[in-house]
Image 1 (spheres, rainbow, N blue to C red):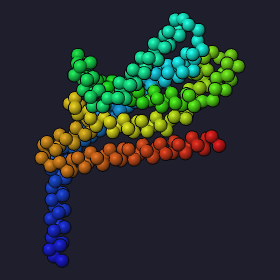
Image 2 (image 1 turned 135 degrees about the horizontal axis):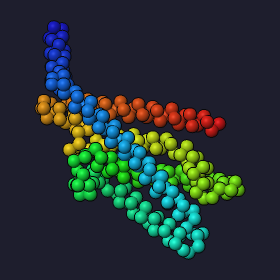
Image 3 (image 1 turned 45 degrees about the horizontal axis):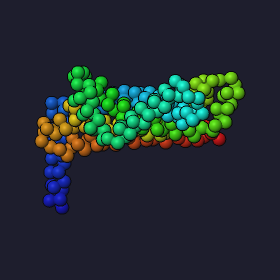
Image 4 (image 1 turned 60 degrees about the vertical axis):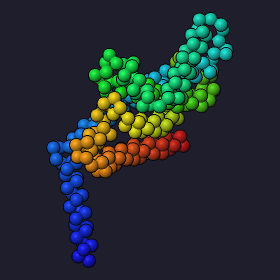
Amino acid sequence: MYLFDLSIQDWWENFKDTFILNFITDDRYMYLVRGLGVTFAVTIGATLLGVLLGVIIALVRSTHDKNAHDMRPGVGRFVLIALNKIANIYLTVIRGTPMVVQLMIAYFVVFVSVSQHKIFVAILAFGFNSGAYVAEIIRSGIMSIDPGQFEAGRSLGFNYAQTMLYIIIPQAFKNVLPALANEFIVLIKETSVSGYIGLQDLTKGGDVIRSRTFTAFMPLLAVAIIYLVIVMFFTRLVGILERRLRNSER
């Protein structure tokens, strides 16, 4: 019994010493705190950019699908078809290539002139990536709206743009809001590859601690737990949002 108690005591002492070495000594926990701030900054900025791009792409594609075949030949129809082709190329390239490759191309090739602003480049890279997925989410929401809603808007004297702005898009956003929230959660985890361009996000912060202490388990476990808590928190919020949306439809 004494030997068992002693082994537990030794394990606890070792755990405590390792914890102090990884997080308390030289205030190393600040690597995680600062990294978490960078992770949220990149995620929020990329989400805003992704939603903006997603709305624009979704409007182009849904407008093309609904109206292109019925439009008269002319400049308007040509521009719409051209924009739709550009949108399709954008979606194909972004969804067909890995996020980490897109990030490295953005940093080392496209935005090399401003590469010292790593957060800015990361926001652009993740925002353009997220925009492709947000576009398809919003487009599916727009296409799910009953065609009678368009006719109702026209009967009220709205043109196509006004009908989309005041009638269709608000309903589409309500339908796809849970999916957009899930995209935000996915984006939080995707930012963990920011370290490939030397950006010290949460994951990189844990890796810096590991390089200082030569112990990998505890800093990486801390990073995993932080991500898990964040994801569980936002997943809970999405669940509450979905229940409220269902209740509002009754």
